Length: 221
Ligand SMILES: [Zn+2]
Image 1 (cartoon, rainbow, N blue to C red):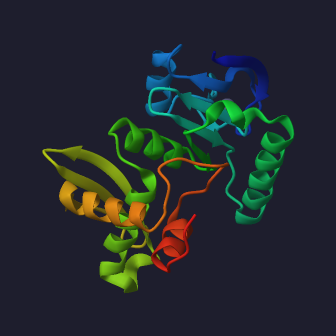
Image 2 (image 1 turned 180 degrees about the vertical axis):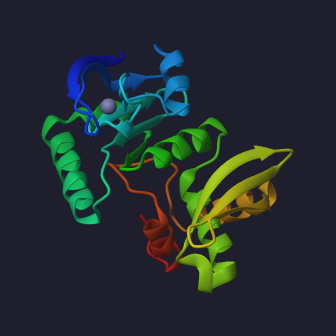
Image 3 (image 1 turned 90 degrees about the horizontal axis):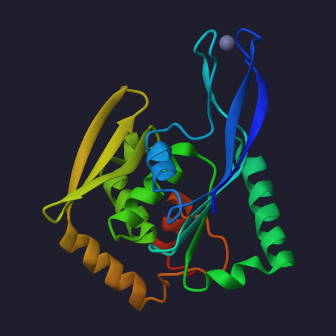
């Protein structure tokens, strides 16, 4: 079941009022078309009919894909401190309601960035796990430690058993690609499993660079 509501929004740029359809929940099995809209960056994106200003709506959204056993809680936020609070709130709400019982064996992810939710969807669509992908990303960025602070690495695609990562350098304003054989992914994936990392969640998880750093330092989930 996918859920939406209409909101009357004032454009922050020109002041024009307009109606926006805001999605609170998208379930893939009922709404494959909504998933495509999400991947195209059109979901919960405000576009002013008058001046064409665009902005992401601050509304939280739940993404559910039963086939991939993936549940993503998306709370748009740029502030790391607020992010922590939002995460705590989502964990507490789920604990209080007991709603996660129906998602046993699922991967539960908490994200705050639009690109991050798109990346997670793509990773699971390609039958990969984001925990292993995050470790690979960290290894790719650590090849150039001096520049790693300016760089964002994202999963791009997998083709002919080659995983392509996109690396954006914010200082240089350049995008690079890095290719990793699927074989390398499989080895790291196997090592993580053997060290106790589960391919499913017991609660909401933030799987990002910090998570991968902890894993590499020997702290398991
Ligand atoms: Zn406007």
